[in-house]
Length: 357
Image (tube, rainbow, N blue to C red; front, side, top):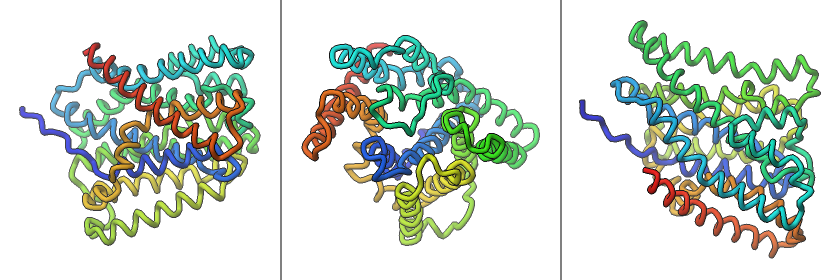
């Protein structure tokens, strides 16, 4: 069987940029953009979508390899991650060695993919002042991805088996049910705990799996060439208008919610999951809209978004330790450093990957 080439999905770089801007500004100016951390939800939905979109055809035609999938994900995630961690540890050893007191256990948790649970055990507060945090606080997100990568092939295999036995709608329905059931975990935990354990709610894999599953199910629907909701959105004027509305809602949330709001855990996280899935649906069905969103700037950010995410937090923290913060030219210097380091580590990782292959 000749395998069809997977087409690029235009617009995802634009959506990644929206997510990244929220997270980066939140890390830098949390009081200015208190809800910027919600951009992570969009990242998670996109990650679940791309994992399934790039693998479902192989799984159905019998060419999917568990080993190759795991190797591909390791090669994608670890080179830049290791570079950032080694560089951060090296610089902080010179500037502020006390901050590295728990480095061995923390590094082990990052490398082995359970950093989110490590942070729960340490009662680490993501919403604390940056000066109190580790340079690796933001790597809980990478742990979520690694854990999802571990179980994803089995979930996809289960879907294909169910589809062969009972049909697409039954298999997709079970997937949707899984999304809904996991979506209620966070609000239920919040209510049962009276909102007292925000750390567990924020970091737990069980409260974060729903966006990944939502992206996965959406990709499976798209693979069947079924277009849900509003076929007319293929026309650019309508799809651009809807993208503008959803973007506006995301930006509004960035400015008007914060991590201490109970509403975040009761419903805003799930609302952001729904909006993220809808935005992907729009750019997938409205190709022209996707091409407009993928301009040279967003395409560059899309290329290096992983490295930018990895570097921004350590650069911001180290700049604070070194006294290089508080004025506009120091923040400009940080931006320049993040760009340079992202390009350097991204290209170095690519060179290492080519040698491995």
